[in-house]
Image (cartoon, rainbow, N blue to C red; front, top):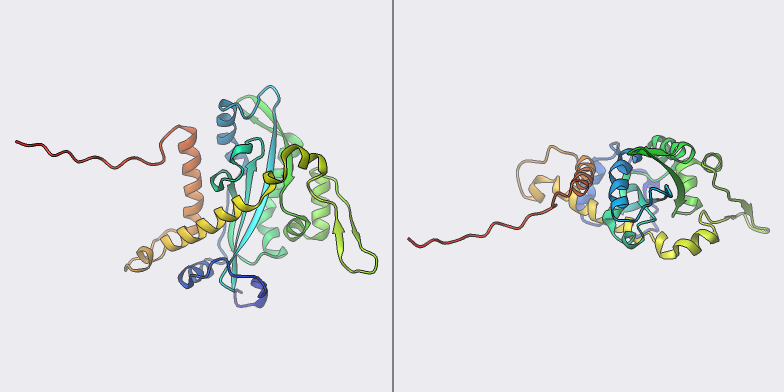
Length: 270
């Protein structure tokens, strides 16, 4: 129910205030989308090998998992979970290099996230334990969570997060401060990881910008011809976002230009 108060913390600022977009997102509550990380990697890895970013003779991929929830008005969040290849360091600040795996409008709480995250967590566990064969090469994976314990605990529940981290072999500890009810925890990114990649590699600006841009563009696009026409788009914004990302993967993989120059007009005198 998007009318309940716990959808968005009232102390938080609105990221998107456009009333028309807010209503479109509210109308989409209950709908969501998921893209299989293994399918995404099948397209990304060959291109990164060709660019010399990944080495098939040292087949380890460092995978970053990020989450973002945009406050769309005061009633609902637009939640995105995306992955990026840490090895491709020069692109980590670019929104288009974060690949959406989960997308839904609603509440950023345990009940919502645990349902949509279930297949994704299964895939991550599978990648960590079994790897992935791409073009006859078995790739191993190191997983990095750029969000903190709060994000993971929200996704999986307090005990669920602990068990899930054990399954994917990431160690951490948590404790309660003396004289305080607050819990502290070790970072999900250990010092050696930060030294190797640097803090910039774990900045959330890329996924935050991507989520904001997609909500602003695609939810406006699915309104009545941008707000002034008679016929409303038959396609859900969430579907259009995921289809757009799939097309970009396909075009980049096959070296198909994403845009073309407008044809020039030539005047022929007779």
